[in-house]
Amino acid sequence: MFLNNGSSILRPQSIVEMRRPVGDGLILYYSPNSADQLANVDAGLGWYWLTKNNGRRYVGHEGSMPGVTHSMFVNEKNNLGVIVLSTGDISSETQQSKETYETVTNIYMSLFECFDTDIM
Image: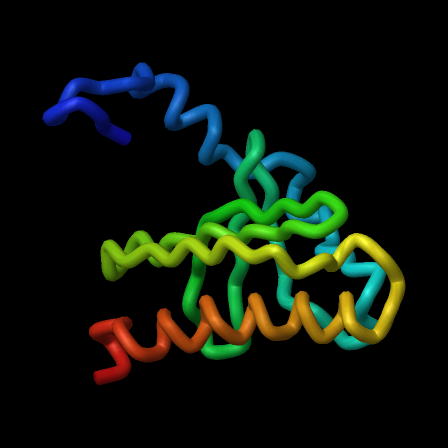
């Protein structure tokens, strides 16, 4: 993680600690807007690892507040990242919130599918 022409902004030990999964793999991904079976997730300090059905693994973070949502994921194997910022609301238990969450997820997964080198 670098900024300012390659100057490190984090100590290597901090990066190792952020990437260390916690919970012994017992942390289940939960979405109040979905009854579907969701992917397995390992969580670190502020980051989590998402392994999809196709075996691809992504590290990232998602967040939302009323009226906004974001997703940021990286496929470290292929050195590829996607960030989606949206004014869509996923914080309520409405059909529109569920559709917004699915749309944001579809956008970033479509971008990975478009640019991932191991599927071209």
